[in-house]
Image 1: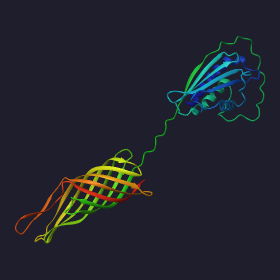
Image 2 (image 1 turned 90 degrees about the vertical axis):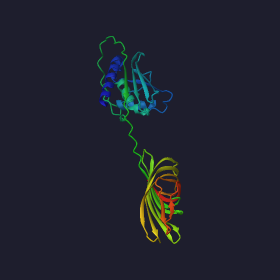
Image 3 (image 1 turned 90 degrees about the horizontal axis):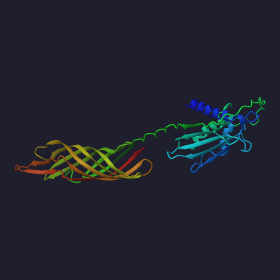
Image 4 (image 1 turned 60 degrees about the vertical axis):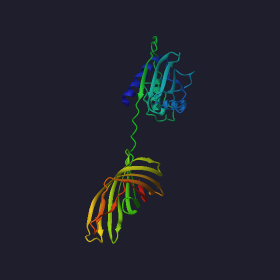
Length: 353
């Protein structure tokens, strides 16, 4: 692509120089004056001095002079365009002011500096298309050796000026996609209290992990182990031992260092019930299932350390009734889970990354 663009620039400049060749100086090296205007919004683009230095670095000689001594007059301007890019227009005329051609260079890049090399190359080829152009190194400190005077050209009528217009679009490489966001993981543990799940106020230890993918809802998984609880009936007692696990989705999460979240999910567990002091002690295991809604407040303390607490509502789906038969063959109810239970916990944890 770069080779084709350079070849196009050389052909255009060769046509321009051919039209201006009758006005070339006796030294054999054509000179030009440069007028460069930055329109409104382009004040940060390349200035006239920097552009002139880049052109002479391309030519390897001092080719830009005042308009009074120049064989060519090059006028240019640069301005922003509505699509977000930049456009520069160059016009070249001979010593008599006859227009030899115009040139337009455009880019979609947000930086107008993306056209600096294209502008310097285009102006250098307008001045001397046959020069061996440097890739942009500064010109040598010593003056180049003088060239022999060219033989006088035959007295022929100069060709009419040619107007050449070419538009070059400078390609902009696509921006690299941002790196994917990492997963965030928070793990915490602590005590939990429950009301309505066991015969008396239940006490448990809980562990929960919160996982936050880059582009999805956060969700929580964890487990609860309840301390054994007893319901007494005279000299007898019924002991309840319970463990459960849960998974929840968290569609609401507000804040960063201090986060308020709301989660909804399900809880599944196994409840073991056994008699103590009955004439016949019997143990049984039952599956438990419930829906849950949690509201939690978490605060980052120091580094990855976090602290927080939560309140929950539990709606048992399976509500077994536990009872025993006394000596008079009467059925006595021991316990049944409440239709709506509540929990509260306090957790310490870590959050990564």
